[in-house]
Image (cartoon, rainbow, N blue to C red):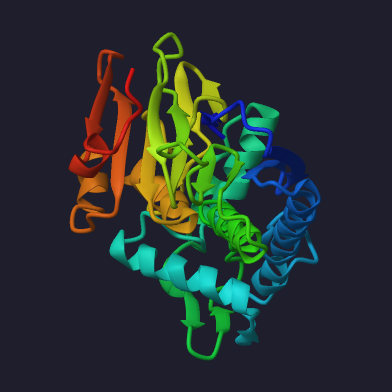
Length: 327
């Protein structure tokens, strides 16, 4: 995942930082507290919460709740699912409808093919791509949000929550910290950040966003009681015969994106930022910005390469007006 990093306020003795590998990446917590023991205990509980969510939502774990649901695809059986998975699938299906399928958690079979392709450095065959694509489509997931039941109607359909589960986990980790009285807190993982109240005496958490060109200095924003997510292929891609294939798959075609894009989304919470960043990456600049136009809480910036390889950037009005540290 594209590296977003942040620079928190320094020079305060009550700043405590913790890290733990979870969900295949490093989860990082920073809290400001006068009680170090309390900060440590609460951070451990926050990490433990993420570990529980991983056991529910990982498509890598064969015994996860998500994997077991995928294994029932085509059986005609609807499964009762946990409240956590229910909440995430509800958000996922809502965005799938709003984006006309540009965000789709039923694309697991296609995503697994491209994941394997990056590992072996070879493109999947057209036959296997077509076979996988026939299992994709958010309407193949029969989901009852009120009763928390889910059924995959077609055999071979696999769920992948890679574009939304991390955001939900970040929100849940921050909620644990707040529950224990740690409101001046920040949690980050794999390019996504969610922040609580600002550290004492500061306007917010100073967050740095890097662009498509590494030689360009990062841009800094203030983040308070909100989230920023990043979606891009700076590091996860496959290049074959001069064509760059992203780790991001378009669920509407089953193909990996070949236009290099880098998306930042600002939102009130991480689950919204995470899922929208993925959807906008697939939709591209024009359609992607239209997805968030009517919600004044949301901001987005999309950097992409034009036909001649030049970097172009488009921003929503909210992103353009977002508070920034004075230089």
